[in-house]
Image (cartoon, rainbow, N blue to C red; front, side, top):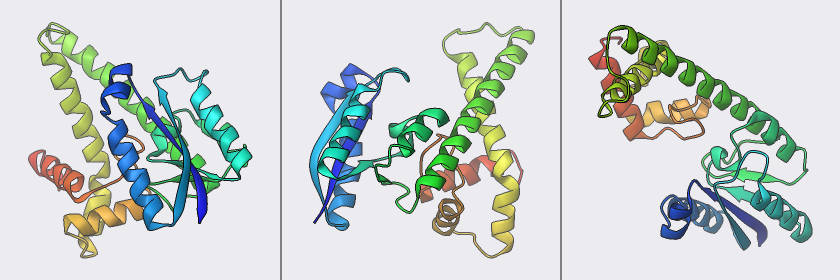
Length: 217
C-alpha cells in the first residue's frame, strides 16, 4: 500500500476545535486514500498561520521525506495561496496530491496557483472599485452590511460575465447540462469564483442562473 501524510489547514482556532472546515477536508482526503489504496501514516493540522510561518506544512514535508510518503491535501488553497510559496513546496521534491484535482502534476499545480492568485487580485481590485462607486453614490459604507452585499453581487456578476463566452461555446457544442458543463470546466482547469475550488453541478447551476438574470446568455 502506498504511504501518505495528510496536511490540513483551518482558518481559526475555533474551526480547529469544532471541526468546521476540518471535517470536510478529512472526509475528502480519507475517501480519496481509500479509493486509491493510500495508507495515511500521519496527519498534520495547522490553524491559521501567516504566509511566512507555516510550521505545520514544513513538518508535514519533513515527515514525507522521512517516511518516503506523498503529501495529500484536500484543495490547492489549503497548500498555499501564494505562487512563490507553492513554487517552494513544489521544489521540495515531495510528491503532492491535491484531491480535488488529482491529475495535476508539479507544473500544473504551479500554473493553477498563479491563476488563483491573479483571480484574487482582480476580485480585490473589483471590490475596491465597487466600494468607490458606492461611496460616490452616497451609500454609507459598512452600514448593516448593505454595501458589502452590493459589492459581492457586482463582483460575482463580473466573474460570471467573464465566463459567459466560454459557456456559450460549450452550449453551441451541445454541452448544456450542468453536470456536463462542470466536467468540462474542471477538465479545462477553469478556476471557480472561490479560487482553488472545483466545479460541481450546483455551482454551474448558480452560475447559469446569474447569467440568465443579467441576460448575458
